[in-house]
Image (cartoon, rainbow, N blue to C red; front, side, top):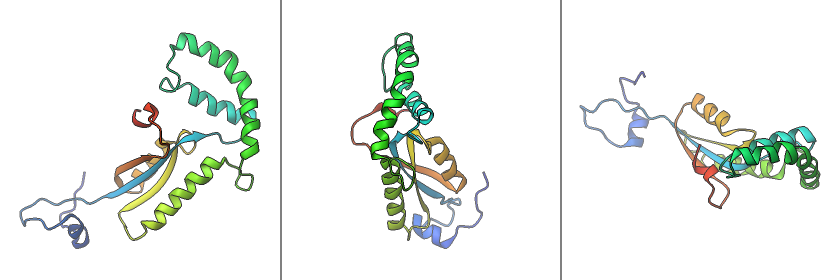
Length: 167
């Protein structure tokens, strides 16, 4: 890792005064990642099945042994539930943006938080979904590519969930 040989005065001010003999301190950006549970990409059978498969395959969501759960999931649930869930989603779908309301609201929260933090040049705000797109992995990589060396993640669903805190 290449550390700067000279400290930028603005960055030094942000971290406080340092003794003359102190080694250089790199001040990177901080990513603020808003995370919501997840949403399908569409209401048709294929996107609903993809979303349900990802969500219901997580052992932290369904804590049954795979030998019991997977035959039910792949034999019954993923063959019947996508059509029913898709119809329910279609009733609340944001047709203007062609996305679920959860994606619309999560994006809006991210945009509003980013706007509120506009004056903080070392902060980048983004959002992701635990299940579905944009994924936490994709957005985390993007934040790192944009210079974030620290990421603070805020789950937007209020209940305790191991899917929030474990990876």
